[in-house]
Length: 100
Image (cartoon, rainbow, N blue to C red; front, side, top):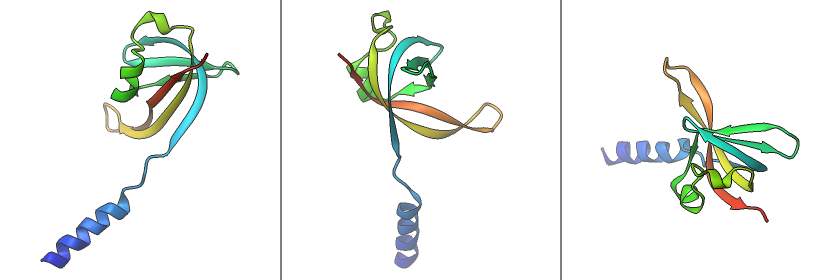
């Protein structure tokens, strides 16, 4: 029994992969219905479905005072399930740094 439990524990650790983070520099354009909107220097639009607690403690993006401010944004992409069970990718902000 111990061998079986050890095997399943090891299997769980092997199957869990670390979450890769990505970074962009972009200007904040607003928050609406749970989404956070940004545009980068090439006018590419980005929206994020959520913000980790550590990042929201630094900058509460629900406040309009951050609109038009430039940020270095670190984010991760997660696979989520929609209302009808379909899979989609959701970008979540991990860290924010205000540019000077």
